[in-house]
Length: 142
Image 1 (tube, rainbow, N blue to C red):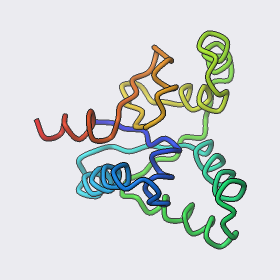
Image 2: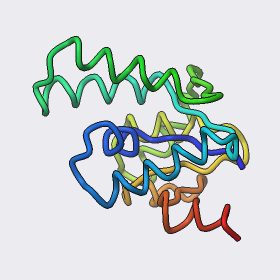
Image 3: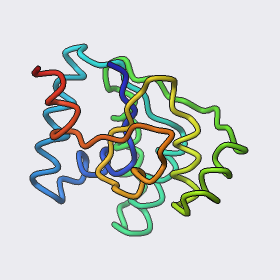
């Protein structure tokens, strides 16, 4: 199964600021490390994480770079850099969700599930968005 890790998934995992979501993320990361998923994220996710950690959480630069570096150590992770701005703009106009989310949606490899706690992303009908525990891990256990 191919999955794409969204910004809020990675933030919940590294910040541990929501215990239940952290536990769900931790379980999925363990499954990734066991090789049960082909995993992606994007440079836009890195940008959002950096911004949130600096602006919202006021973390020092060294902590931010430590988080970003640790994402790169996730087993087999592929960083997607290519966006389709035309498609992203179509999503933005049609669904009125954050433009960065539309850019991320435009980056998803074919037949890839976007793993996120962000319910706004579910408005984009052209992509599949799933909760880590309720949807993704349940599929693996079946």
